[in-house]
Image 1 (cartoon, rainbow, N blue to C red):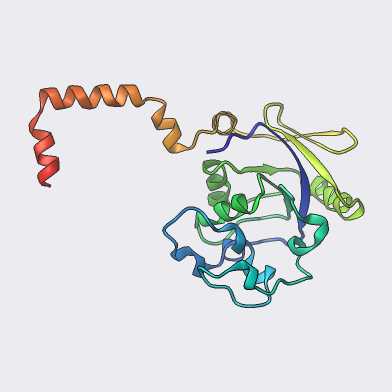
Image 2 (image 1 turned 180 degrees about the horizontal axis):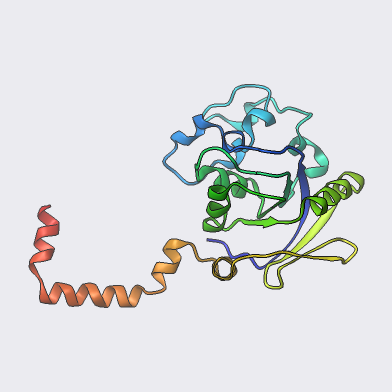
Length: 217
């Protein structure tokens, strides 16, 4: 998992409340058994005028010129600004995969659906909860200033506006540790690889029949 320490990036505004996970990545794209390749289908039904399906060449699609992510001023954005209850709906982990693989590293909103919120941290994506009034101010600033960027400092737990004003945010200590060090659940386990190998070797030495049982199972 990619580390998250300090991010300075262009902000794209998703000015809709209650954006659910089927809007983030529609159900037909959940058929893939891979964890990659979902970025082109982020917000697929809003982003394109034609119906999308798995394996389709994105270059053959008809982009919706009115959708925010298709506007030239937001190309290359890495911070997604959203309204309340972002990520509601089903528990599909494909939603944070699609957001991350599109190029976003951080989502800022007044509130998130619980499962989506948890899945973000497990996939290197930082969800930041800020007061609704502050988020509304950020929407106004993004609209007023093309090229609007925010700096997200996870170590210091602040979002820094272009003029230097800092907005503090909360993040649970363990989740912060995992993001700063790029550790997902597998990475956390592999920190103890030597102990795991030692245990398996000792178990095999004292109970050698287990190896044959596993092979013949």
